[in-house]
Image (cartoon, rainbow, N blue to C red):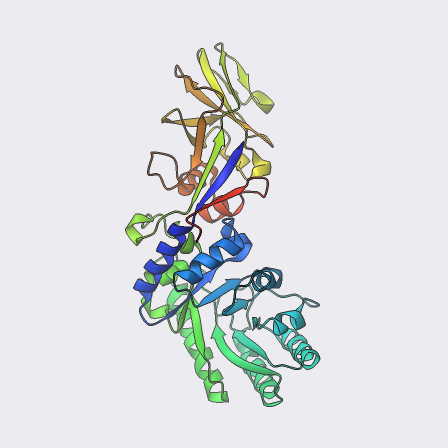
Length: 374
């Protein structure tokens, strides 16, 4: 193949098992939003279920409905809704729905009437992240409205939840502050009469660093795919995780150029000496960050090389120096690092971003090849 993303499903299973061992009695949700962080929605969801994840989580309802269409059973929570979204279809498919505001609750109630069955809802509190979720001053009103809908047989309030802003920064003052706000939100909801099945707040970094945030359920996002959510503190191996994605390509061309030869658009790089160049057929259309121009690391011919010149839409160039390789040889862009290849974190640092973005942005033009399928 021109290029492929190899997805190790045994690594996904291993990571979920490692998470389960870490969080004790808390249930585990495998977050498979954004095509399982670029790894493949359905195969990764199945692997996570096989390893004991009792919940799956998606951002948008289309992802959850796709899981149901593929035959994935069990609990699925979806949390990012806009007016007019397929609430009725989600209720009919037995998908849990997050509610952050009265407008969403009204749409859930209407959809429950239309489908003739109650919706399972999780009320989300904004404890300080400032994105979705209900502000503390509106919380009692939302809880009371949800309980009225429950009394009318339209919903079951099964969850109370929130999300951290800075859980990947130990000691950040927002972390204990958000925990305190969440405890208060839970207490107020229970005083009104909510009996939650699950309370959940921990994302991957909180799951790994803040055991006091585990509550009844943890949401394993990036950790599911074996990439560290706290790279400045711990690598994947330190956390018992194994990276699941390897991005590989076939060298398309090799050439010898003279000193002073410009490479790629804008000639931002010129050879300082006569050298050999290899062409790798991946570009920003495939998810290779253009910001990693002249910095991105690649393993070619058994040695780490560096991207030279600008990353183009479909290709980039690496400098081989005095070495040479053949067209058809393998270029490893990133992987677990077992063979000396760069990791997703190496690319994140080269591009000035985070590893979440590196794996998630690998485009649909790159086929996924699944290893360890059952």
